[in-house]
Length: 506
Image (cartoon, rainbow, N blue to C red; front, side):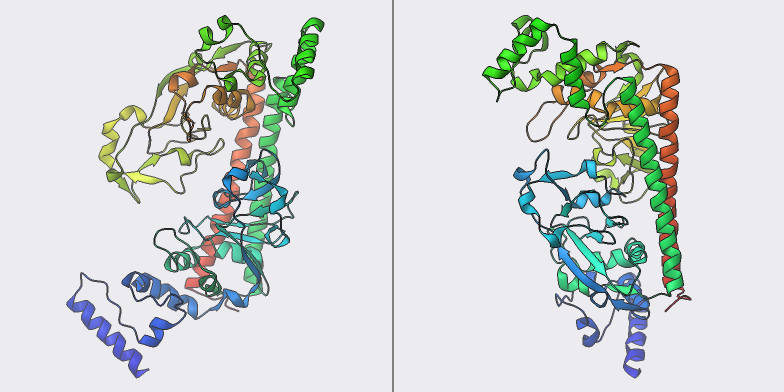
């Protein structure tokens, strides 16, 4: 006690003498405690870290005391990714608020091992890369509908003597995230080692409080599942209107095309298919290939692209080019990284903020306020639609409310007329437009597309009554999605408040 008082007195006197510095005087025993990497740098002993550790240590146990198992994932080669196969959860997938099986990459089934399989009540969290992202944790509340494994940037945790739903929420709080950041084992690639993971401090609260948090997680999950159901219903309405099977759109596209062909055309197709069963052949005169499109590569002339174009042109309500629905547009601005801020009043929307129909600003950077004057046309407003022009080309979202934000380069921003923004975004993210984007995309490692190419894609002119039906489901879906997020945020706040005033301590 005397030594502790002496250290505190010395800290206070030195802090008074050097108010511009952050100082910490600690006994060697405290420096070495749970310090697996034997660090003595000032970053590791930041005042805010020490204060949080002091608060947690009074009410916590180490994670290793609660673990029944814990594994890093497997490391498949990206060359092994398949169109069909075993679903692989990567770090980026658990930063998406919920696990969307349809968005997961596939790998050969040879990679399957039981310890890498994901089950109900597993907790997955990011241990490599963006470990400072508080949302990079996922709770598997239901047994997955199919086998799936996870990669090496993810750690899978199974626990005992603690409610896993409560632990999941705690792992989204600042009191867990700072521990991950503090214990990174590599300055080049942020990485949490197994010994440091086992030493993470986990607060011990009453069962009643843990059950209260579990109820919020369950309510959040229900709202999210209802949201997904409504969005799927909106997609099914769209595909039904355009006469394609939502579950197997490409198969139904080919089937409808074959049914529409004359017997003589079918005979020619069958003859060629029998002669060259391993090839995808398209025979065209120059007038309908190079002279028309400027392209001679085989990729451009895959039959699925022509079939989709014909499908849209034959739509009963007619069609138009996207540019006919556009009031104005801009292509984003190349803001300098020197103007980036961690926080601010003017956000910068980058391509990685555009999700499937949603704008995710959880990892947004900000700009100096004066940057708004550099390109006023690239400031977003409610009702604008954003479309990615690089990487995941065509990925789109709707700006649902007025926000102070600018669009970065390679993002097309459009304002539209005579069409529902919700329905247009659904179309842009659907196979009807994905195939068009895929066909005209250029580039090697990263696919690119121009604003003119995007403005020239074909859009079926869906009647207003059907648009209204689809839009209503989408809007209800996003309302429920927001409710789900709000419930999790409320649970997180309750846990943080309980740590600061642990009245429900076990």
